[in-house]
Each structure stands twice: as C-alpha cells, then as structure tokens.
Image (tube, rainbow, N blue to C red; front, top):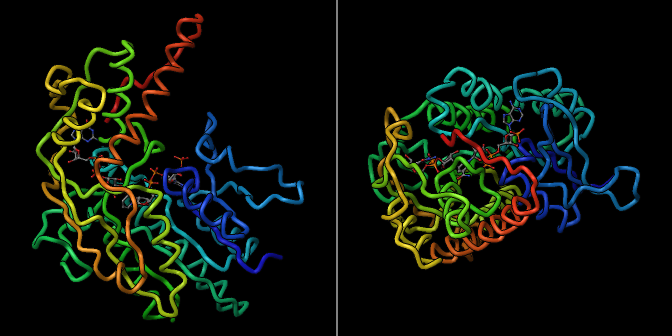
Length: 350
Ligand code: NAP
Ligand code: F7E
C-alpha cells in the first residue's frame, strides 16, 4: 500500500484535475470521489486515468456524493487516506442564489460530513489524516479592508459565500476541538483553460475563440466593473499541497496581489486576436447578481513566506493562455461543423 494516499473530492472539477496531475507526479496514490451523472463528467481527468488493473495505475475513482454521509464515511474507511482535499462544491456564485439550500447542503454540510467521517476514522483506528478545506475569497464579499489577509473579517455576499464561511469555521473548530491537522486555503479566483465555461474568464475566452472563427457573433455579460484577483489554477494547487506538508495546520490566503476588472479581461482577451471587445459584448441583466462582490485583492505574504509559494503565471499570460487554448478548440469545432457533425454549445451561460 502506497504510504502517500490522497483522497480528492471534486476531482472532476478544474482544481481537482490539476491537483491530481500534481500529486500523481509526486508519487501519490490518488483516489477521487465522483458523482453519478447521466453524461460523462470525467473529461478533465481522462488523460491521467489508467485501468485500475494495470500495475502502474495510480488513480482510483469512487462513486459518492457530499450530501450522503454514509458513503463518505465508507469511502474514508476504505481508502484510508493520508491526505484529504475537500474541493467538491456547487461553486457558481450566481447559481447559488437560485439554489441556496442545495449550495448550503453541499458546501457547508458537505464539509462537516467529511470532517465527521475523518474524525470517526482517526478515533477508531488511530490513523492521522491531513485535511485541506477549499475556502474562498468570496468569504470576504463586501470587503471591510483592502488588501484582504487571513485576519480580514468575513462579509459574504451570496449563499455560496455564506456556506463557505461555515465550512471554513467548522474546519477550524475541528482542528481546535479534535487536534485534526486541518488547513484552510483562502484562494482568490483562479482560472485556466479547464475552467468551467459558465465562469466569467472562460465564458470570454470561449467567445473570443468562437467569434474569431466565425462561429458566434457576440457574447452576453453582466457587470463589467467588478474587480478580481485572478491567478492560474495550476499554481494554486501547489499551495494546497504545501499547506498539508507543514508540521502544523493553519490558514493561508493564496492570491497574486493584483486586481483587474471584468472590462480589462475583455479588453485584453479580444485584443489578443486583434479585436475590440466593444464591438462584441452585449449586456444582459440576467447575469447581474442580487448582491455583487465589487473588489477582491489578496495579500498572500503569509503563504509566500511560510510555504515558500509564489505564482508563476501573471494576468497577461493567463489571458493569452486561455484565449489560445480556446482558439484551438474553436478551430476543432469548426472542422467538425464543416464535416457535417453537430456541435452543441450551452445556451444558458449563468
Ligand atoms: P468546479 O470546477 O466547479 O468543480 C467542482 C467539483 O465539485 C466538481 O468535481 C463537481 O463534480 C464536484 N461536486 C459538485 N457537487 C458535488 C456533490 N454534491 N458531491 C460530490 N461532488 C460534487 O470548482 P473548482 O474551480 O475546481 O474549485 C474547487 C474548489 O475550490 C471548490 O470548492 C470551489 O468552491 C473552491 N474555490 C474555487 C475558486 C476558483 O476560483 N476556482 C476559488 C476559491 C475557492 P461534477 O464534475 O460532477 O460537477
Ligand atoms: O464572476 C462578473 C460577476 O462567476 C466573476 C468561483 O470560482 O471565484 C469564482 O466566483 C465576476 C463577477 O466568479 C458575467 O458578476 C459579469 O463579479 O467568474 P465568476 P466569482 O463569482 O468571482 C470565487 C473565488 C469562488 O470561490 C467561486 O467558486 O464577473 N460577471 N458578467 C459575470 N460572471 C459570470 N459568471 N457570467 C457573466 O456573464
């Protein structure tokens, strides 16, 4: 049995896929929780998946759900992980206003279900499990100071943000009550070519690729004035791992320390292919939120000094990386369309 066994919830998501690659590269046996879906939901990790019967297999997938405490407990007992990364979430802020109770169930109660399963496992068998909680800059919401640090009070502005505050504090409570090695990474927005297509940056890079290839005429967006501290997901999963390698658990802000508006992202993304964003963006009130987070800017001094972490990809590099990847994707779509194949694109983009 590999002494380094990680269990990742949310393994099929953006961060789960980068973390899986990272941990496999470090020699971990990686176990992932996947939920049943009527269509395939493993596209982000298919490239690293091997048949479990192969000797070299290092990745194992298990059906479970954050809303089901029994299967979470069974999974912990079965896998006996040395590290657990809790990345599963209904992670879309706008959607959390439409599904507030479900979001709370998965994000807030899901975290305590998992922590309880770990606590029980440790108590019974004496194993030590290290736990990572995916906290979020959305917890700062209507910010009370700028830049935001580990000491900045929370003021969440959405059901998602509120649920993440619960998950954050229950993680700290379990650390203090049960001596659990549990850390929270308060990660600011991080993106990549694997970002879900309904999040702002990917919605824009997808649109740029498709518009450039003549597959789409415009893109509908909401608030262009909000500002975010955007980094690259591949850099941020390294920080998650570093947190669990420390002797003592703690909480860390992970951010680039630079903030840019949605408008700036649009401007740079369209400019990369020689287009003016103002010719292609239309405003649709459906994409505004009942309460907005206007400005996020993180101070990650603690992570940089204590963990030795720093981001490698800056804002301009992130924009061009995403647009370039989506130009290629649109080219492939165009080829399929020209060959007479049906290509489906989402109609509701949140
Ligand atoms: P993501 O791409 O939306 O992935 C979410 C993952 O959670 C997916 O694997 C999804 O499975 C899974 N999931 C959703 N509901 C579930 C349930 N009921 N049971 C089991 N799994 C469930 O999110 P991400 O961007 O990778 O973010 C990873 C984590 O970091 C999330 O907790 C997010 O809230 C948090 N976070 C993200 C950012 C960011 O900027 N990306 C910043 C701070 C914090 P399916 O594939 O089946 O949908
Ligand atoms: O929105 C504005 C929107 O949905 C960014 C999640 O990963 O990061 C993410 O949450 C900004 C907001 O990300 C559209 O109003 C304008 O101001 O890409 P987003 P988010 O809400 O910041 C945090 C850290 C998380 O933890 C979350 O899980 O862009 N915006 N027009 C739009 N946003 C979207 N999605 N779609 C639009 O059409």
